[in-house]
Length: 481
Image (cartoon, rainbow, N blue to C red; front, side, top):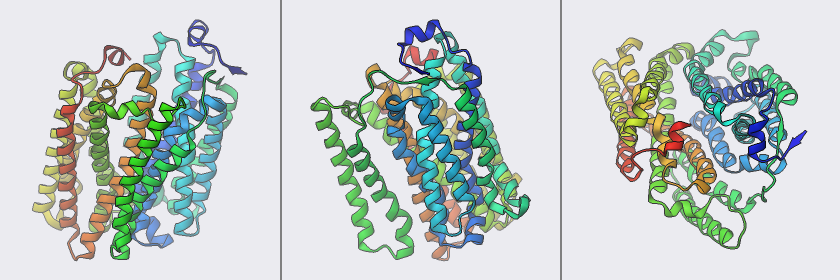
């Protein structure tokens, strides 16, 4: 049954199976989060067994997050047009099928293409769940429903790398690294069947057409930036790589101009142009790009350092990164104890300083211990960086969105989430390329890791500086939510 009733009616008659439906949505979130994390640990093993150059290691993560970044901007609108349940099921089916293609890939090219498909279908699936929660739950239950995401995502982020390492080392049925993708088959099929049975169908009565030219422009611009960053080193940095990166800026500018004209003509734009006239929001986007680039790029390089440089197994590499994930849980818990509402932007700034201190501690540890560094020696710096990460991320989205008007919040949320994913792709490309370039220049693994860490510190410093453009506190209704 398709429901197009206004929200007031939905509040009077909340959906009967809403809590069961919530767990279906959470299952999809877990699949997406795990697949964003697992290749960070498994990448060296994948490259060793499947072949391919060093760029394969980067594309495993960047292909997924780049496709997710582009798709998320318009994924939610697909649900408005064609029905949220229908698009959730299509996204889950496609994500599961793409996972199967990843698991049976016979070449690096096939694996990368399958990862891109995973990201695209994930971008169709994820926004529908968030939209359905807003439709299914009455206001007094909304906070509790969204509150379920914190523990689930925390457990996934902590357990994801460890699970990936365990699956690769266990080599179930001789599948090796392929099991990190094949495990999605039962999860995905169960999510699809449960969605067909328990998710309601909602469709927005006032939904407008998709901005396909806008999607095309932003996709081209992102690709022109990330592709040469990853492939340039292996090709010797030919002139076209720099032309491509410069062209990406021009295409982003063309995208902004097109969106402004589309809005002026009365058509619904992909991104509301007025957002970019708000200094706080624009500063928040750049701060988010810097922060998530450093965070995701560091995760990849740390996994490469522990496995290729220190000789850790995939499981040992996953366990080595565990202090950072647990530190993130601690930092998030501290923020949620009341500091987020009290300090607002100040908490974000404290978080970046703590995270930078943790990264500096890690670099110093690697410098002093050399090749004899062990998991316990790495733990303090990682844990401190994780605490700072949790403190930073807890208020980030609310603070950035406080700088926009209520009627712009939908477009702003989609754009900010897309920037988060684009930051992951950009960080994987930038820090991964830097790391491999130093190794090719006969730098030691430890020295290359230290430089990478200091680049992350620089990105955190940029985040800290841009944070002064943000509002001091989230809006009262955001804090209540």
